Image (cartoon, rainbow, N blue to C red; front, side):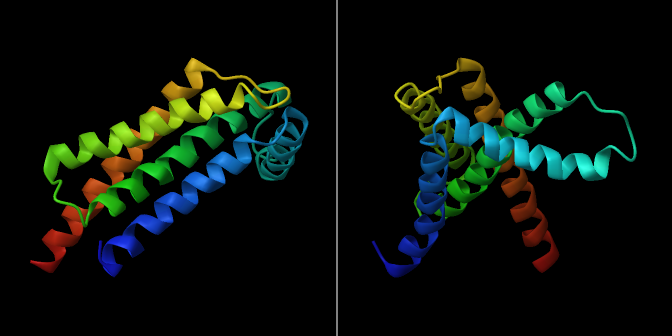
Length: 148
């Protein structure tokens, strides 16, 4: 493995480490973090529309899953960019890595106090990963067209 390959894989692995770290937080700490994010967002949104805090908190938590795996999808495609995988095969490998990581993450949460592993969260994570992978593909194609 050359330096270029290592440089491409490090961001993805660091991001996976951050996801693992956040998933290892007990329920109370995780809830506090999402509540803080929710209250920060509410400062902007409440001036525009009326918001049900419980529902909005749920959206923030699920949005965190979607966002984290959106970024993971991008970083996984970037990491695989130095591999021999190309085209739809690269997309499939990237998606598989992301989904397997999402499944392992939910399994990991079964052992964290107050947390649970949710199949629905794997679905949200997979959706985020797929959107990130699609975003990566579109941006790469746009860059290639612009350079040509």
